Image 1 (tube, one colour):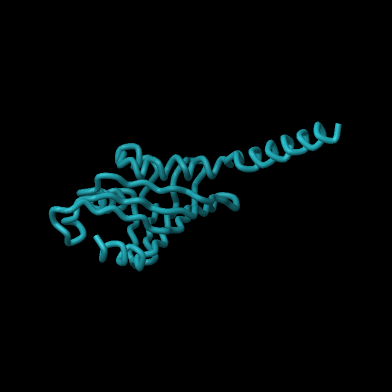
Image 2 (cartoon, rainbow, N blue to C red):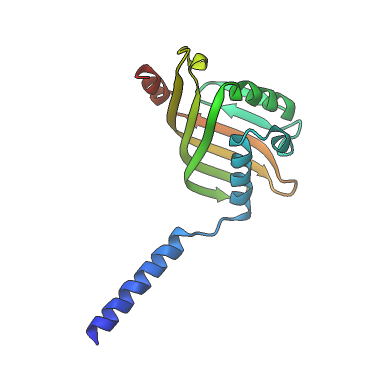
Length: 160
């Protein structure tokens, strides 16, 4: 009998753990994840729908800011040039209303010429924090801010 109760307790503990790990995303988090997937899939047509003329993209670490959907799209067109793979693995996501914070790693794989290493394929994994201010009513991005660990990027480039 004790063994059955013990096994039942273990099953219950694993069920609660699995439930906690399969946390349901909020409406804001779903928009953020959809946006990040669109961004990293290079789907510029679909990406345009997330922006308007007041949207802002800022890379705080690099000190670059772009305002307006077309300027942001133009920036990403340049950034995608030579990119073979690009994704963002979200390890943690949370929000307060329409403000969403995503912590994770950007994974880049691209032609070495972009990084001053012609003839090579460069792979980088860079810890990052991305914040989004959303217009949930219109399914748009008001502000996208990236804070990327460029020191780690430099260290990885040095050994490739």
